[in-house]
Image 1: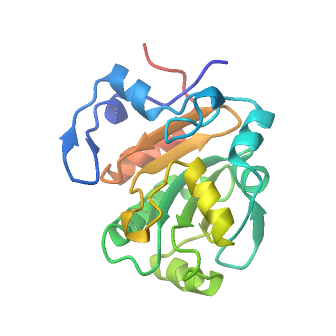
Image 2 (image 1 turned 180 degrees about the vertical axis):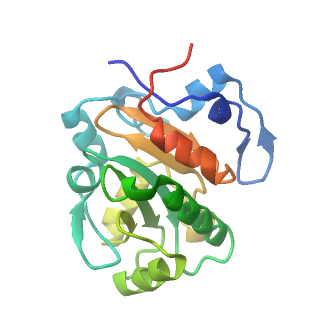
Length: 217
C-alpha cells in the first residue's frame, strides 16, 4: 500500500523538539522517515501505526471504549478515527507545565479550521490521568479553553486509556512525563504525521488540511 502524507515545505523544514528541549533540524527525507507512521508490520511504537486498510486499522487501534467530556461513549477506531481526519494530543487537567500552552494553541487551530471541526475533522485530547480526569472534570476544562463541537476530551477505564495511549506511542506511564507531540492522521487512508507541539498554529492547521496530499518529490 502507498503511504500518503502531508510533507509541505513549511512542515518538512520545521525543527523537532524533544522533551529535553534540544532542537534537531530535519531534512525532507529524514522527516518523512521519522514522522510518518508506517505499516502494521512495524507496529509497537510511535512510528508503528498501520497503513490504509480498515481491518488492519481497527485491529491495531482497537475499539476500546472511551468517554468524552459530555459522558458519551465511543469506540476508539469505529467511532472516532474511521472516516475522519484527526488531530490528537495528550494532557491532563491538573497539568501546570506543557498542557496549557498546547491546549491554547489547539484552540487557535480550531478557529483556523473553522466549520471543518466536527464534520470531517476531529480534535481528540486524550487524558493521561483517567482516574482524576472524570467527564465532569474534562467538561469544565473544555469549557474553559473554548472547545467547540468536534473537539473531544477523552477519558475512560484506566486500562482502556492506557492501551490507546500505547497504540499512539505514549508509554510514559506517568502523567507528568506524557508525550507533548501532536499527531495528525487519517486512519482510512493510512496517512500519519507527527509534529512538535511548539509548531505554529497555522502550520498545524495547514498539516490537517493537507494530510492526504500526495508526497512532494
